[in-house]
Length: 70
Image 1 (cartoon, rainbow, N blue to C red):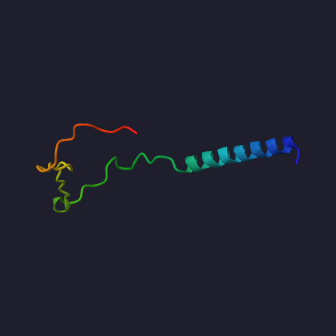
Image 2 (cartoon, rainbow, N blue to C red):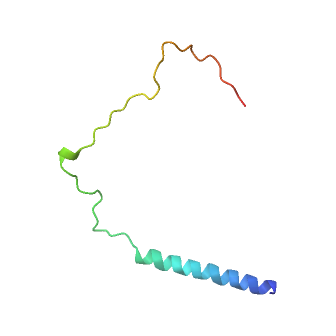
Image 3 (cartoon, helix red, strand yellow):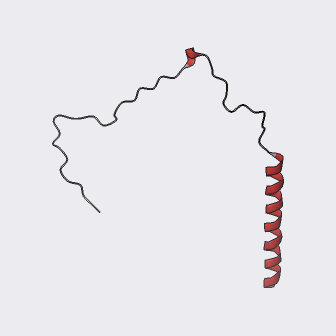
């Protein structure tokens, strides 16, 4: 297969991908009537987050005084 035919095929595939992407994006435009936020569900289903530190202090452990570098 000559090199020029590979270049032509690559250009055609690139063009088809570009046209296909443009058609896909054009068909999925943003709906200006869509709400910006979803409706709020009742307060009974609210999620409560407990934010606590994940590192616990162990009184029997000596303090870390150095780190190793590999």
